[in-house]
Image (spheres, rainbow, N blue to C red):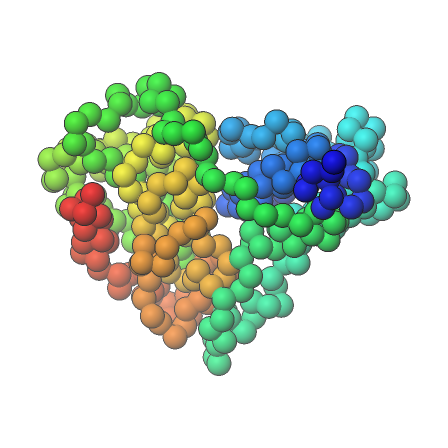
Length: 360
């Protein structure tokens, strides 16, 4: 008798190619959807192509998922590279469907060459037009857009694979093994509280002022049973975080070494709470089922990038009529002062974290 997954797979697909190459956040957002697809359709082989640096993010992956690192800037550059990539993948894996979770010029070339090979294709609908009423300066329409995860699910539906959520977060069978982050710290002891703080974001419109965040670190580090882990990378970020480590007790930076996704995700899983911007670290922390307190500035949860199952009461943001002014926080502030971030008092963040500590 046919299983439910076989009944839903009406087209009899066997090997499905998926692509998402861009920023870390975009790739992280695919994980709940792709893992769910694999579990809904255990008889289909899924092949996800992404940037080589992203492949280690896919921990505890379903057995029918193969993640392939592809350097499209060097090894498969331009339209000729896309053509060669499709040729190689279709020959090696007998691809019969392609789900484009990117929908940019490069992935459209992949779709074109898949079409020439009679491979079924579908793509996401990027929210460019839909977002305009939400982010425009005047007469905003404050209605939430479809989440990116919903857009990814819709793309699978277009090739005949409706998806039910079967993803329950990383480390489904229990807490991550503490030995995974032994190079960073010893296992949590006694009534110790571990707090993660990720103070950086790619764009200024999403980053809380560092002077204000330092006040948060200063206050929380004075709680005797608290240990703070600082997440970041890059020379400038290392310098800032190392300065905080020198000034405050029980504060440790992860910016000096590239520990890799498996190690940092295991540590995140053991955190009691994580403080982040609207950034990749927000999404990674939600995937390991750690409570995340997010600070929002120029962007807004309505833009469709809210953390996986994140609760509204854990989102710190100001009710300003100019918010959101962009989808990604990459546009200059219309006011010129980034008031949406600068006006958030460090005490609000401190009290939110302290309330969690007291209640837990």
